[in-house]
Image (cartoon, rainbow, N blue to C red; front, side):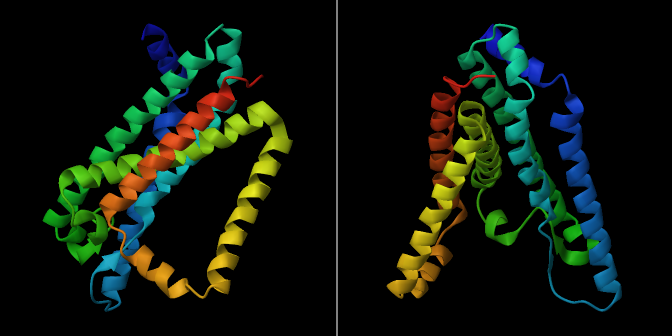
Length: 231
């Protein structure tokens, strides 16, 4: 456990990258969105105003997943840190960061509702599809989404560290062909209406469960790939 904690502390050497930038992204996105809302109201806009800027720092987690490996893995190997300790310490750190941010999103959603959408009936944190669920589902939804994005970036980085550019290209092309095949199958069987209804039936809890399953698969795949990665 001490080695895992040391890896987490090593990742936090550059606090600006892992803490400062996500906060700046969130604050900037929020302020820009609220400013636009006020302009819309001054212009006579009616109804509930929605903004998707809350997802901006979540996508940054994908970049963090890449940086967490490519920037510190060579240094960790030079310090004789085992791949297992590096993996567990990195994952533990970002799980903690994701949980803190998920709780923050939930609390800000409560403030947003209490203030009447910041005085303009806006929805930045308390998006209805998510906010209509209980507190645990909301927090887990944000937590799983951020962990999933982080694992996507981390897995991509492990592919590069293990098989370099060739491995990333082969995987990306294979994934593209699989998606193209799925689209072609749905189109040829004329089942787009059924697919649309299936997607519309998804709830926040269902998306959370599916995202958690995919994150676990990516986490396992990343570890197996990292075990043979070289610097």
